[in-house]
Each structure stands twice: as C-alpha cells, then as structure tokens.
Length: 124
Image 1 (cartoon, rainbow, N blue to C red):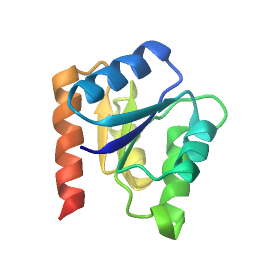
Image 2 (image 1 turned 90 degrees about the horizontal axis):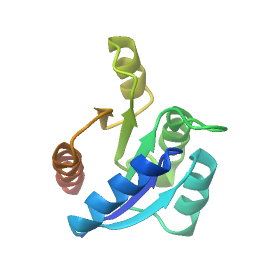
Image 3 (image 1 turned 60 degrees about the horizontal axis):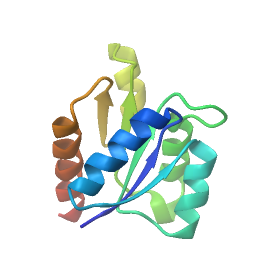
Image 4 (image 1 turned 180 degrees about the horizontal axis):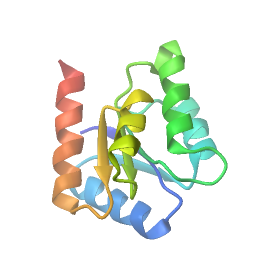
C-alpha cells in the first residue's frame, strides 16, 4: 500500500496512528517532531504525511507550509491531526495547505477512512 509519515510528539497517539495504519497495510515511519519529519522526508518521500499541529520546535503547520513551498513536495498529501477544533484553527490548517484536518480524539476507523480518501484523491 502507501508509505505514510507520521509526526506527533505524543508517543501514545503516534503509536496508535502507526499501529492502525500498519494494520491497514500501509508502511509507516513515525517521528516525534517537525524537524524529524523533514529529515525523514529527505531520506525518502512518502505517499502521505500526517502531522500533529502542536509539536515542539517546528509545528505541523510550519512543516506543511514548507512542504507546499518546495516544488518536489508541493503536491504531497498532508493531513493535520490536532486537538484544536475551533473554526479559525481549521481554517488556518487548510490555509497552510492541508488536504484534511482530523480533530483529536478521533476513532481509528475514521483515521483509516480519511487516509484512504486522501490517498485515492491524490492518485487521480
């Protein structure tokens, strides 16, 4: 299936997301922050990136903006995962270039469905 990069500073959520996506047949690389996500991207581009918005150092929003600014990653599908559910937060996520926005807490089934939906749109 797809190669998915997951960046979240919360180890429990990172492990849950990685487990569920691996269970769904995806190859997952999980990292703890935005800088580690950018390093992992340079080693081999994934098919999709899942980013927590609030991470130490470089936020998921900053990583998303950087991906959109670079020609080689401008079209890489990005899903933001966050506890921030206010309308302005969601708007900020999409204006940073996210393809989808998942609010914590989320069900593993919803996560899998949204990942598959974004991946299928990216293949078109």
